Image (tube, rainbow, N blue to C red; front, top):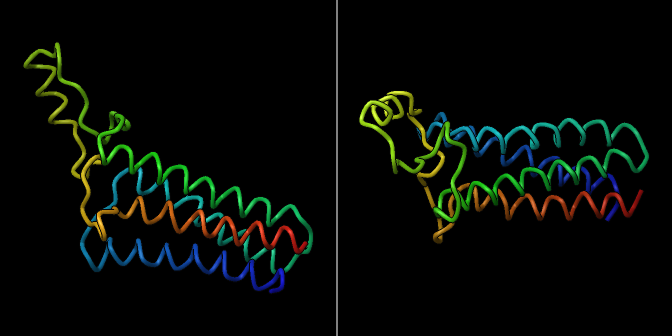
Length: 152
């Protein structure tokens, strides 16, 4: 396959994942959490990089595309661990430890909690959450970016 096709597939894959995320958000009425938003930013960057890489030759843009795909994969892996309670997520969107908290502090934490939490799984397929699927798909997209880089 050619460099152009690898770039188009990689950027198109990020676009498809973004459309899927927006579909879950607006059609499926599943608002994203903070970490879900964080996973979207590298996809948007990869789409923009893909458009530029189709217009400009060189190795820098496919390398940046691969970095964007690996970034969202890493965030997806982190988010998956938060969902599976392997580690704590950001205190602004996850349930933290309440050990040693006063009733007033606990009430303040409850009142400040976001409506969408990062440590709850709203949807899964084959026991994998959306964050897990994003991670796997993004690793595949990174491979496409690396193939484009190899062809550059």
